[in-house]
Length: 145
Image 1 (cartoon, rainbow, N blue to C red):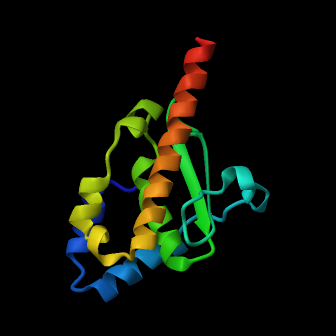
Image 2: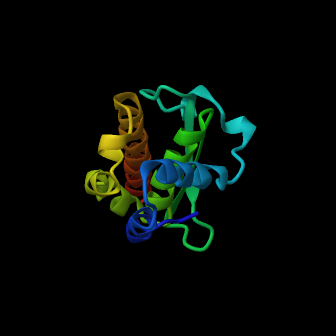
């Protein structure tokens, strides 16, 4: 599932209050594809989150030089946050992912003020893990060329 920043902002703007926005975030998480049980490993775990969070990446089928991210959590709101970050980062080249800064988006969506500090820290940890995967992908690509 790929989401543009503009699409997220537009959808958030159509919702009247944070109760509706939280419901929307949860619905995004509910729409995530099933996460493979075999990938629920320590190596795929994101540290710094209150909940358990796993993230993986693979090349995009139609464009192998682009990355698709997938994640899961044991908390529904966190699954929604995973849907946001994996949706925004997926389908991009590793160098694009490594260069992206989502703080402005999170501010515009209100996530910086409507999430607990623990959830904000977890969100930052997810973003950093995704960027780390992109940097490793770039390094591996450069080592083979």
